[in-house]
Length: 431
Ligand SMILES: [Zn+2]
Ligand SMILES: [Zn+2]
Ligand SMILES: [Zn+2]
Image: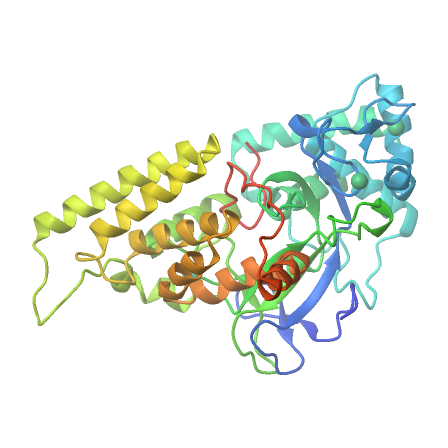
């Protein structure tokens, strides 16, 4: 696989969803459909001093750019690698007197790159940025006001007389970022540290029963020498067999939701009414609410209600403990909750799936791989494939380290803990 290679896909006009991507060849589960480097990416405002602006690694000691004193890097190598991207920004920050918010910084980086390279379709870019959807007309009044104010700041900060970029084309870029800005996580793969734009990924439409998933591949960030830090990229991976000619889809929202909830979230954040088969027919809604049935006997409505309430409460507690990094508490909460759920809820029940996926995620970080795998195995409805891909493909380096340690029968180095924040949506939502 070569990063940027788009050989396996082609762009086409869907029926009613605008443009989309389809497979040009048969694909197998786990296959990388394409890998795409970020067109532009920036570190979140609140992490600018903690995360390298070049490789997005989070670490304690960073060196700052001597000129703008804003950009921070692991070392000279990272700084050099980022100079083309930072050069204009560095000057803009000095002229403007201060850095701007992350959205304006990202839009500026995109515009500088467009000015530098032009905006043409090529072998590794299937659409120009100008042709991507922006949904500017669908924005709420408040979103529109925010956009106008960002455009105004950008004009002062960017200070370009380039005739190619008028207010309308600048608004367009903000619109694209708003609906397709992709959350970038740090080298551990769990804490959101920035936002970037991947133009080819923007072409992949949503489906509530998708055939692909997106994985952010940070490259080998564990390398001591940043020379070996590879460029960050996303990978689109097949989570089932796909035939040549089939449309490629991903889920923009958390999969573990009932269709009504998914649809309202999609409408609110992505401005469309989902017409996928699962939404129109409400497929799996019944499975996601199913209760345990043994010898034709079901638990009473009262018991089910009690367990659901208990599960909701547990999920709230887990969110809290997670944000404080209390991992053993999270595991205990999961185990206790599963004990309550098991005799009452079906394996396909939404609340049981949520707890199972949390348990296997956290346990794998605590290196209880066997128990983690046991929970992962119980996750029906495709979650397992997705979880396995996430656990093992997101960080292949870690996977090999794990395997090696297992072969030598030794404990592997302590992994960093999962972050307090769990990224539930595919694209970045502005707070
Ligand atoms: Zn770095
Ligand atoms: Zn600088
Ligand atoms: Zn749907």
